[in-house]
Length: 431
Image (cartoon, rainbow, N blue to C red; front, side):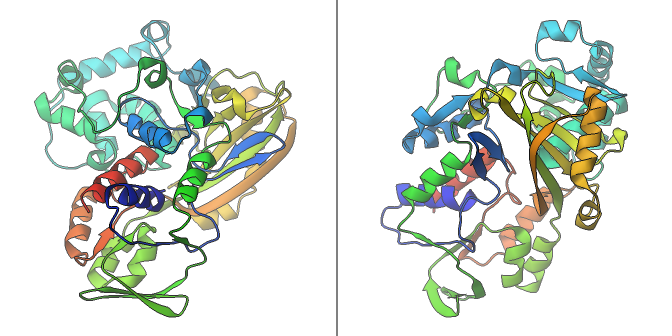
């Protein structure tokens, strides 16, 4: 998506620039990949985008691509999310009134009181130490641990608060207390069309055919520029950039790399290569299950699992609750995420993950699930991990990169599709 969105905006803002998109495989889109199987949508990567705030930049891209009629917005059930711990599902507060009746109310009150007296720290630190200082270790162990596992498949004992949750660090910098700072905080403006509340108030948006629709539209828009099955044998930097592609030399003025850090590292000098290779990626197993609509009684977006449960399961997403258009009259698709930074790819490969997921869900829902069909994909290097010091590392990578090399991708400036599209637009506009 970084390559596709950058190329789209390069074409839009720099009409006099000649360029090609070199794609190693036979398909574009990277981890954004949807399949339609018997009228059910199976998502193997991101399954939706927030339309609120900065997400409106992606909505603007959607509109420019002529995809507005293909949009679907999340059912209100998507606002209801759960944690699974201590042998039961607990609904997370999703409104003021739900907070008042929540079993977590006392914990939230304790966290608020602690934040009021939090001492500001100017340097980078782990998410764990930051949250402990502001909200307490119990709050961290339940909520932040689960959130970081669910979004980054990461470890809060290693990940950088400044790189992963920069808004919290910015709020702390104002007067120490995050909650006090929020009272006067104003959302920063961004350069895109603004959409009405009927759109921006929804939890997520996707497309009738899944997120693959966005990839397909970008691919069609760029069809004259994409070269598939492009193996890069060598890259040489001087006044120009020489790429040896499928054994043939090609010369360019500039190279924009959107391949993973560990891949581009092979084509750079030793200092830059070492930095790029020091960015770790978490392995993930994605299991999609086709179930009868009566198989389980569950009314939310999904649930997350804190690491304290010592399970390989990170959480489950009830896709068809969120986007009913992706289901049929009789069947739904649920996705179980497993692994993350606490596991190596060897450890994940050695487990019977379908069995592990089935047993875990049996425990959660107190019944044996009648699974009609299931398919699993194991991704070795899935989500880049922004460990403490990541922002300094990015600055060093930028400084060491040759003048005619631009590095762009989820390992640099944010892992979400929103982050990627925004950065691609910014760089292409200023290219």
